[in-house]
Image (cartoon, rainbow, N blue to C red; front, side, top):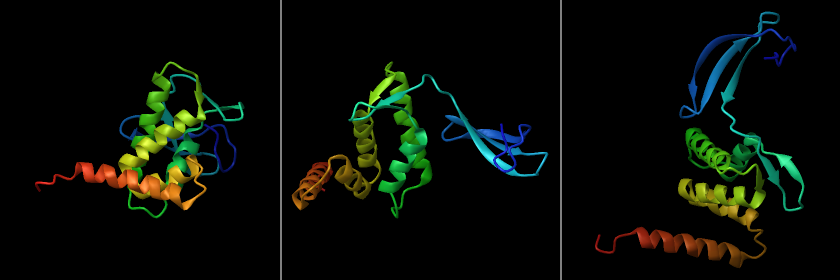
Length: 159
């Protein structure tokens, strides 16, 4: 692993342990040349996934971009980082085990919406407003009514 500080090719692993619900290995590394310390994560990759954008352009799947999408939707929300990691790992596992290597971006978007709905209603509405391209306040009202109906359906009227 190349040192991010000095570019040396010879770094040493000082500590390895499972991370992210056992789906990755966290490695603490040190560079013998500059003394820099850094962390890397190692994950199993079943296949190289390609995302098909709405324009038809193909780009490599980027797990970090998926995490950033969650983080933007969840900004200033009381949600633990671990829940985001588990949701992202679940989406990646589903994509890799689907057997497809070309994944439409809207399929990934639907998976994110589904995960955010289970994690945090405010983040769900935030993401849905971008994903569904809200252009009118009525669009927000419709999603909020949808959430309210879901919540009302879960409440036991007998108490």
